[in-house]
Image 1: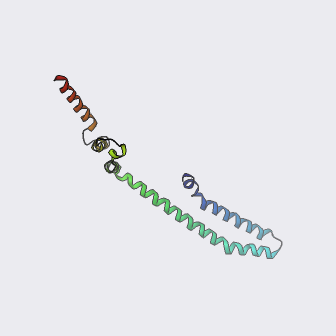
Image 2: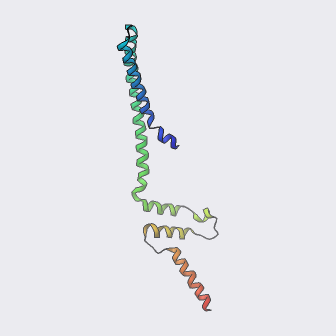
Image 3: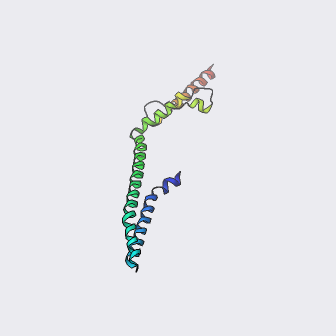
Length: 142
């Protein structure tokens, strides 16, 4: 896929170079040929096929640019509200099921994401550690 993304934009350029090379060869044949029939056939080929080839190459290039522009705009739209998009991702993923953990860790993961990304709440992991420390202290005093 990466090779396709690198080399696909070069296709219209390579086709245009081949088209220009063919027109140049036909012009040289037309100019330096001693046979007028060959020179006239070369001119006819350039007139008949040169413009069509260039037009097709330009249409391919325009289609390609529009696809790349659409892909760029659609991927860049994620960055408009990146914080909320990341929080939404954490909210939509079921981490408990993914981790095969027996306890529900989704609220902890969502809270940690909101703490680190938005800074809008207390870190749930620190709260859990404090609760465990308080419980251990209660057991120790008993």
